[in-house]
Length: 589
Image (tube, rainbow, N blue to C red; front, top):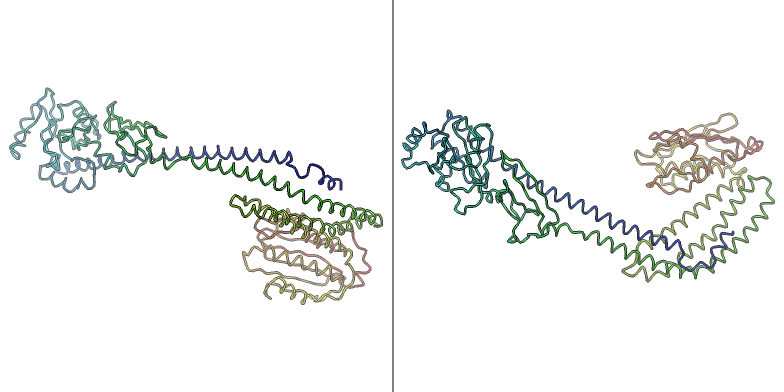
């Protein structure tokens, strides 16, 4: 009762130190959540940039591999014609490729033949026999000649026919590397003769034997336009080859150009004998899609909640002042009952009886303060009605008050269970005979069961020893079987009652989820329950009442169960009044 006196001390009605600690802790958690969310956003945004970067580079590599396949197809066509190919056959092959549709960004596909000074004259005679105006240009002092013999489509690449790629270092070195290694190679940056805008480009070679190469000319910006439209990307990139910029999207003319990009990276890509440095940067679209506003919203929301909590504490302090007088009244009432209970305890004969009587009276008298707490909660709800109706109301306040009501209901159930547990001795005795068939029929109705779900077996249909407590035992065991059935299969509960000498053996078996053996002892203790979050709430007193009732009549209860195989509770009970009247009652465990 000392604790009850303390609640009405002078500290009531004021903000306490614990409240300040709670507010400070809540503020700390808000700041932590803000910082954590910001770090998480930074991580996700960084991953998005990396994914966009890798996608862009992957598209470049994949596109070049696709063009390489086309060039090797040209090599295969030449090899299929005995190691060389005529102009009509090459024209037919190029038409079948449909390069403008299937290979966007490519300027054309052609054939280069390699010759020395000794073989060049014969080559010229052969070509002029078909095309009289064919010539090789420009003149140079190299020992090898690499004229472009064919290129399709010829209409857009006529300026390149007859061009000797040996005249220029980048063209010549890549062609020789392709011949010598037997692999596909690209040139360093060049300007294509057929490109009137003189923008950066390169040649792509694949060799056929040692006699020449199939090649394709590329203007880099056309290649990239065919790769992926800029409006579909939230990154921009530039490409450098040996320090020369061959492609650049980082220009102020771009509407989405970001002068200070959120992320940037330079990646070196090895492609067919060259190393391209790809400079990838985010644009304004990326910035717009990946802001840090979410973490800011979290911070602002947290600060608003903090303000609401502080306001609520002041409101609760004000409400507490109104509740103090009522709490004092409840305290005086409890003190009076305590004096009465102390007097009654002195009259009890045994320690066990004293504890049971105390439990009964305490449970009964706890209803008064419980009702008081319920009334106090309702008063607080009335005081906060305007607050709950406001748009700034914190829904958790109303939820917490609802939780108080739920706990009051739970407390009422507990006090009733304690009273039932304490009254077992009081109600023990001889009553009217208990008709088991009728009792089960009543339970079927009360529990909403079908007739086939609750069956009676055995050779005993009526028992007349302490039927009040026996009925309570059956109600608890059958009720638990129904309450905790998991629905995995249709519910079945079987009650068996058979005579064994001067006692009855009664069992209640179900097909529910079962109980793990390690809990077989624990479940019979007061306030012990194995309820999971998705099961009905339980006071944990029912099986304690069952055990105590049975042991009061000289019996024992056992449990046989495994997970997934249902449960069977078995106990013995006096069979007739004579046997029950001669039996000394056992102390409850």
